Amino acid sequence: MRGRVGAVAVLALTAACTATPNRMPCQVYVADSFTPANNFAVSVDAEGWPALGDAASWIELGFFTPQPVTNPIDLVHVADTREIERWHLQVPTTQGAAPICRIGTDVGVASCGASIRVQPQSARGYYYLALNGNAVSEAGMSFRVCRPRP
Image (cartoon, rainbow, N blue to C red; front, side, top):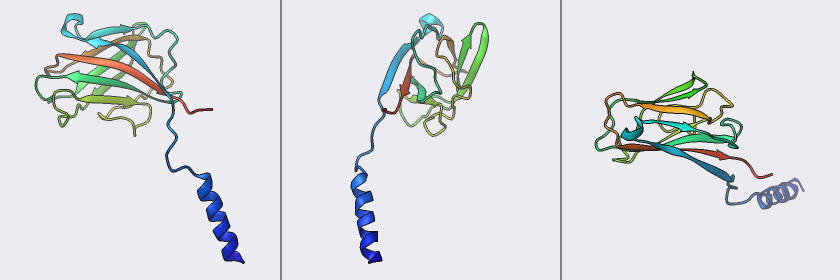
């Protein structure tokens, strides 16, 4: 009798589970591009954008580099003349001329050795890249915020 009850329980639990994971809907907020023309600095208005840290969220930077990055690149976030956070990015050399870095609210999301420590954090403010001797043609920045479905 116990065997049948156990088998029924396993079947019921298996039927309740889906084979494919549910994906959280994500919103992408495109910020701007860092270029030599703007001295690798951009302002982000972020009006109406959710704060980073209240859900699965991250900053994504895509670099265009004529040669591999050899030193860490710093991304600095400033708001109201106060430095909010500075990230030392270990840009991967295995991705060729277009490496991508994710700076996440969860260390598991981070791909370049940096995570968002100040949470929640508004995306609004001034951002600049300190290239630290690396050759970078351009870098694009966006913010991604994912929330579970209700």
